[in-house]
Length: 453
Image 1 (cartoon, rainbow, N blue to C red):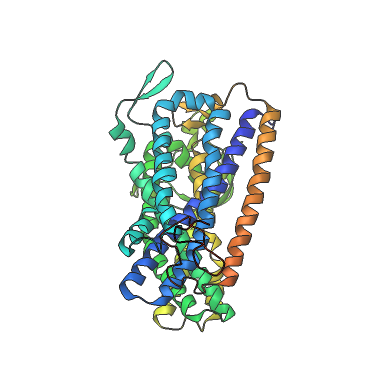
Image 2: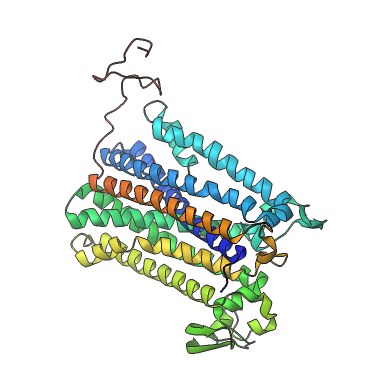
């Protein structure tokens, strides 16, 4: 395969978005967890919830910063690497990105500042509200536009914003983030119980994470099925690639696992279940399901990637469901802390939601190929025409080095916080708390009545 600006630009964007999506998923889940902790602390006044809140707030702050840093560069990549896409879809994508910037960098960041610095400076109800507030579908299914002089101009913003696809994909991603937070919290609790430290805090984290995950996973599987329905109806080539279905079948079998061969349009070593493909695709035992040979070869996705990534995602979901349900059962029976094998399973399960999110993104985005805006614009036509191979190699290498460095420091700091544990650090309002930027003397007294030297 020749390294062209197109291939390198796709690799660069794949790297940056894969790196970035980890942190919003983590922080959205942690924001929900912090909301629960603050609400429980307000309702019960138990110190354990205050300790856990302070502990997770530090980790949340680091992950939030990493997410912002890694996300900013993607907006620039639209201009540097994908200028033709920006030019053609700017009237639609531009306002949506501007709205995202306003909510993420203005509204959300303002409440994030209250969350980090304002616990001793604002009322409890307002602080709780701030915790709550910290909490690309058009390209998948374009609607509400008209083509004018090669530019996609919006004609119906309601259709764009309230597209049925958005309201299927959005809750699916939201629950994925909540599950990420739940498993990270439960895994941390299991780790402390295995080490014999922070018994009360570990018990709270362990049970809360497992209970939340046990409730959310069935809903997530259902939303995943709804996502499959929209892919089946609106992106039939992608659906056929996910199923490694080369020819029309009626009724269609389901390929559990195989080695897809795109060159010969066949599957090797396939394990299939008759009729199940029709049931999954159309909720029918007799429906006809289309194969990839119904479409021109130039419109085929790279079959192996969505085929395997989808099965990894589903496998992670099933493993998470088994861990959450079995762990919840043992917790209800008050046998969880004595079962070290189960504690190890919970601790080692924390990567599963991250893997599921990444493979889900691979399935959605690579399964959409060769389109960048499905059915409207090919990825090959969206790349910047003046881009050269040396320029793209240099920017890709720079991104990999900088992101790796930042990620390493972030993970190291989070690990240190985990080692320190949920110790009590909030001893109440500090001197000069009414002055967020006021200087204090080493002994804890303001330097003067006015807070100035």
